[in-house]
Image (cartoon, rainbow, N blue to C red; front, top):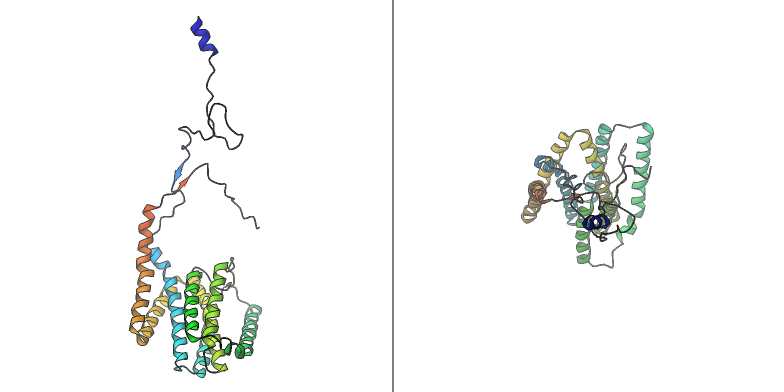
Length: 303
């Protein structure tokens, strides 16, 4: 009789519940968990399984742009050595501008006369502004030593390659939904400053105008042309990229053998070693998701 009364009077222990708010539960510590806490845990839910061939094909865009920058540096070098005069540079500028417009016209999906006219007017004002400002660029770094110019130019080019947006364009392409990112704008500014530093070491104002126009055509519009080619045909993009790599390696080899080995090593690392390394380290990725994660919005708050 007394035992039954004792059992009846003993308090029943409450069951622990997972609550987000409400403070401590009676009878439990604030950090208490039981075996049901990890029931909803999910491991590697959002990990993307990557294919080696696809990663290698995607890395071609990086190698392509590295070769484009290498060609720009080659033109700078030959201009500083007086191998290219101002007439050669002006002819190169005209050829690049015409080729870029030709590719843009062939690959554009939403093209009208008004859009084409606006592009022509922008390029006209752009070229006119460069020609007017070329005397200022010519004397911009007169008080700075050449060694400082070379070191700063190399640092800016490395920064440009590191922050460049290899999956998009430097300028917004027609029909594109996203604008250039903040890091891509920093990358573009670094390339422009590097171009002005090189141009300030040239002998004449026409040299300065031609080399700055060439550099800005490459850094501004080469990513746009490459983006349009890739969007039009991925096979054409691969053919253009591999042809550009072969031509760049040939020109660099004629300039210096050590630079050829260095560039070849960079291309091999980007296209072969890097993708294989990325696939291998995917095996060690360990991501845990559960009810304790922060909530994620399923809509865009800017719309």
